[in-house]
Image (cartoon, rainbow, N blue to C red; front, side, top):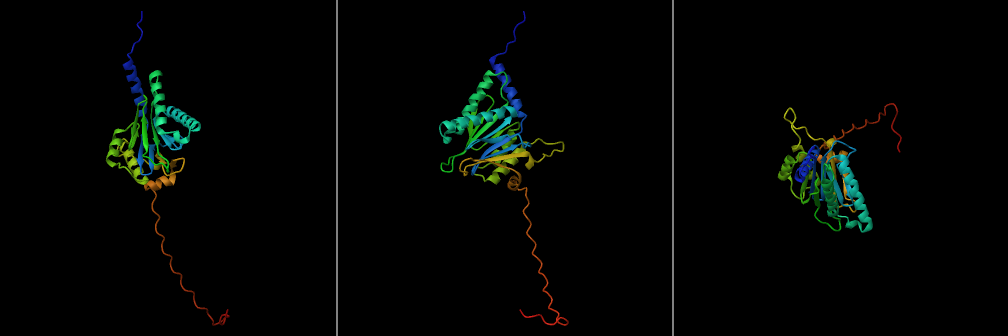
Length: 266
C-alpha cells in the first residue's frame, strides 16, 4: 500500500512564503516616501500602459510589486470597496487604515486557504484634506496579510537592502518635491546591478513612473508627473540660454536731394 504524501503545516507555509518571496523578488523596485506636501511614489517601470502606482480614492494612493494580474485585481477590488463605503457613509470615512485592513484580510485568507499565495507586496498611502491637515500615513501589506505602518518611507521589490540603505543616509523629513524625487531616484539607482563594465546603467526618465498625493489639492490628491514636468524636476532640461542682444541697425542715410530735391514737408 502506497503511503499518502504528508507535509507538516509549517512546511507548507514555509514553501508558500518562499514562492511568494521569489515572485516579488523578480519585480522592479518601488519607493514610497513622505515629502513636504504629501506622499511621493517613484517606481522603476518602463511600461507606459501597465501602472504599478495608481489612485484608489480621493486621498488614497496605491503602489505594488510582484505579479501584475494579481495586484491589479487587488487594486480594482480596493476601488470598489472604497466607492461602496464612500457612497454608503461619507467620502471622508474612506481611510487608508480601512483599505489596508481589507487588503490584509484578503491576502491572509488567500495565503492560508488557497494552494498558491499571491506573489505581491502593496502599499496604501493616505494624506489629509487641506482643511484638516494630518501627517501622511503609509501602510505596507505583504503576501501573507501582515500589515505595518511607516512614517517616512517604504521600499518594495526585488532589491530592497541597498535602496533602503541609501534612503536612510539621504532622506530627511520635509523634503521638497524636487529633492524628494532626486533622493528616490538616487536610491533606486543604488539597487541597479552592475554591468559587465562594472558601471551601473543610469535610470532614465522613460523608465520611471512618478506620482504624488498632494495634500494641497482640494479633493482628488493623486497626480501623475510625466514627460517634460518630470524632466524639469530631475534637472534633465537645460536652462534656456540668454538671448543675444540685438545688433543696433545702422542709421538710415540722409535723403539725397541732389536729383530729387528736398522732401515735401508733412
